[in-house]
Amino acid sequence: MSKEKIPYKIYLEESEMPKAWYNLRADMKNKPAPLLNPSTHKPITAEELEHVFCKELVKQELDDHTPYIPIPQDILDFYKMYRPAPLVRAYCLEEKLGTPAKIYYKFEGNNTSGSHKLNSAIAQAYYAKHQGLKGVTTETGAGQWGTALSMACSYLELDCRVYMVKVSYEQKPFRREVMRTYGASVTPSPSNQTAVGRKILQEHPGTTGSLGCAISEAVEAATSREGYRYVLGSVLNQVLLHQSIIGLETKAAMDKYGIRPDVIIGCAGGGSNLGGLISPFMGEKLRGEADYRFIAVEPASCPSLSRGVYAYDYCDTGKVCPLAKMYTLGSGFIPSANHAGGLRYHGMSSTLSQLYDDGLMEAVSVPQTDVFAAAEQFARVEGILPAPESSHAIKVAIDEAMKCKETGEEKTILFGLTGTGYFDMYAYEKFHDGKMDDYIPTDAVLAESFKSLPDVK
Image (cartoon, rainbow, N blue to C red; front, side):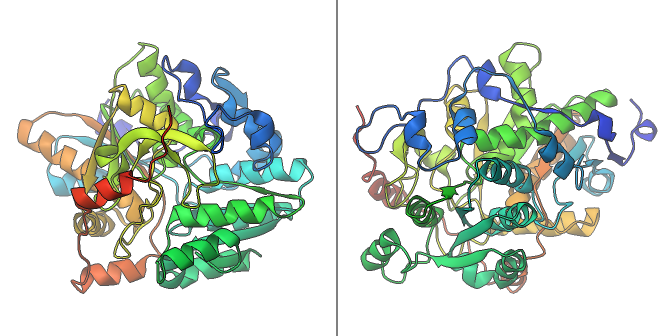
């Protein structure tokens, strides 16, 4: 199709917005390994999970067979405030690069949380409200998830308690204040508010924190309060299910104009946005209907897929959560405080880990100075200041476009622009001032971290 016939931004009509989430696991021949009880190492039951998570979310978490799950009307009505999100052709970037490649990005920054996280936050808050709960607890790294959840809880009049990774709490005060604006309480983690927080502080005095630490605290806070449950912004199957709205909209928009991506790229921390973007495309690949190349892009400072091991591991530093089989760096791994963005989790979604282990997608890790250089290049050309997380995908999308320039191939590249970077100016300042470095853990550091893996037979 000629360039002139494809609009700069492709929007779906409201009537074209998906009415059901897509459960990728239903089409997987090799299902993700089951979650295990951390005490018995036996598959965890729904009843056990319901002490931590909302009942309906537990059903979604354990469902490996239902391909489409209807989106409740109340959630659809909320989605209409900022969805469908645009699919954008990066014409200006293509021209600047001088590449024959066609570059598209799905932009998820059209809401106050500034990211894709709201897609799952409203769903999880909705199910908590319908269960009659008083509130929810959670963790947040860079702050996008905590912001999104605080918005959803404010809308549904639920109490929201957020444990924010300490280094982000200190570096991103404005993100913290947005959460408080929406009524959430925000605590730097690890903290003295929980037993597990006090234990971590005693064992690691002066620690800058990690998502694993914050998860442990949030789970303890939920399970020790009547009428509360814990919710999570990434990693879990239920979250990838909710985020499938991203990929479903993207595919519908591309199908509308007869566009077929050759390469699909997403940043990868716990896996929520990557899993959401690739879901319907990966489904086609699994069913033998089409073929695509998928690339997960990780930070070199926290490379769970590309340098981790595929094993059962604790989902949190305090070792109170279920065990998940995933590509992991070890539950005690704490990324360097110099790592500026999110993507700080020690492990990867069990669903994506299984797909990667089956050879159905690739993984690359990139240093953060290269990531910020790509972010700046994109901002100057496309007019959007991208989040550091999204900029990992931008970096590799540009790399792939330049390969097309060298070979003359006219590939179509799709990547996920998961959010904006307006609360990340501290990191941009470090980059501009030449104070940002590229910490990459040594093999020895990772080997020491792997020693904490549980002995699961």
